[in-house]
Length: 339
Image (cartoon, rainbow, N blue to C red; front, side):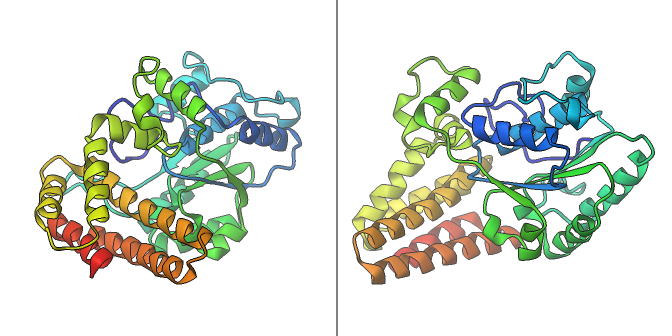
């Protein structure tokens, strides 16, 4: 049962259809061993930065479980999904009655993806588990990502996790697990994925059609994220990053022209992905600066930057929740930096 999900980045393969995963061999081995033991935890919290393969791993594991319903007879490794077998076809097409993908739904009135996963989406899982409870099959819910759950949805998920149905598996994805309810985290087994190494990122991008060496220049800017590499490559991310860094290096609001130019670029129509890239870039840059200040022993500056990163996260979240003007949202970012 495939639910609505945010639009796919240009050049990406949908996780449910992706037959290859790079850089997470240890995580795959852990999941295969845990399942084969017959004592696997009913909820796995798959943590890590956005765009490093969490959803692809979740779908690979779902394919593994449904292909080998008896844990004790399952192999000790997760093989690449076969897109031509019945399980692979059903998962890829969203036709599997044993896999539920919970993500931000599409607003029927606007045609756009909502900013949160609502409680109604989580309540659908009760119906999903009820419909399949008599089959004896594994039922797998992928929450992608749980960071997008609003408060009511998070509480609804918590109730299900507290009393999980038999042969139910919850794969809870999170870019920022610190935002989740502590009670949700405590009911999940944490599995943290690391950003991809440059060689693994190069292989992943090659799988998506990039020629060898074509994007060497952006790999170091991608921070181990395939999603960020695609944004840099296909959505003007390099220009945005260079403009942002240039403004920061100026260190003041004295020359507002480049700031207004960047804000207007990001506020233009059909620049949703570019704007998303900017919001992530701004927060990540400040966090990196805070780490650098702390390493250098400047604890006061590290504290200031840490508080600034929190303010940026809250600023972008408020702007998204209330659909605020993007130009003004971007302009205010630099007021927070230099104000």
